Length: 362
Image 1 (cartoon, rainbow, N blue to C red):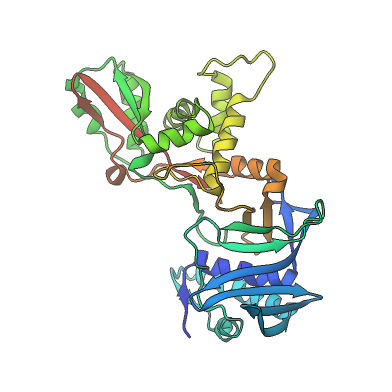
Image 2 (image 1 turned 180 degrees about the horizontal axis):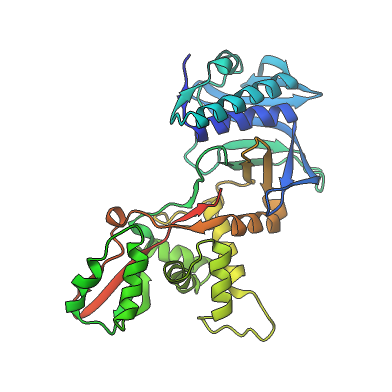
């Protein structure tokens, strides 16, 4: 068996091996630091392969592997730890060599032995790994789906760009003859420069709507003012020297474009954006109607660049929301692929689209 995959895919195998070896998950805070006093003992890991469903149960430092109620194999947990260390070392070596996809022959026979024949668990949801933990607060053993975010490779996206994520602004104060001058601006920062040129020529950008009604209604479902709030963040991203979600939200907290009553210092924008990020992390996508039902019912497992795995559990919702809020940024996607960044005319009106993409910082 020769299996090749990218860093993200091998990170899923690494996480599986490390969780089974350590037999527990540690919670993390917004700064990606381990919280030693918040520990979730792992009872079992559930995995679906093309050949069937498998259960990896942990009991007294032994991992019991079974399928359809029949025990197939038992191995010491420390064996999983050793294989996890080998996997991590090879992932980092291939990253240094800039290999896009690669095999790890050193663990192939072990993967086959434990009936793990594919790198990525079979799933159409945001769940990458399913874990049964012991909840010491309720004395229950919930089955939880986690999304794995790995820092071993390039930062992953929280919200992928698409034509579905275009925000349309009406351009007032310009004439149609000025379109060519603005659209002719090129370069690495052409969107920033075009927005600046619109303002220099006396133009005013006013949010009109999100072009995709499904995405618009998904945001409205979370909060009716979210489309307007995110439109202000996008404008700040292209006009201010800021890109992180935390910084952009602070800018609009200060300017208060919606006109909220701040007499009691409520953090209106921060609260609403955190709720949006959480829903995006756990199931919301732009093109699919969002019902509020989470795919990743447990939260996130973050693989740090040193190999440590931290758990952001929905039970500790504040830590999870703070992690998302402080570790994400806006970025510019392809203008030609997603059709934004140029002034265009419809009837007598001029419009300008900006696109929303959110990526993890690291």
